Length: 56
Image (tube, rainbow, N blue to C red; front, side, top):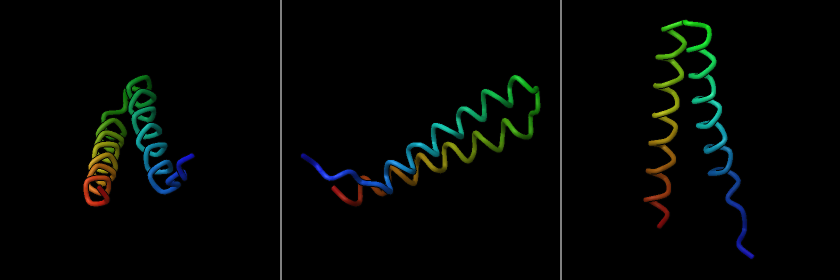
């Protein structure tokens, strides 16, 4: 069995939470929160992809 990479798991959960925040912000019709969660979501996703590329 492979060992779980806890840092990457936490990072992916954070990305999912950010995009859930986008959905909540759309429901609240708050453009600033939408932009904030989108930027945070994509930046966390790019950090995760960069770390994965560096490891392999």
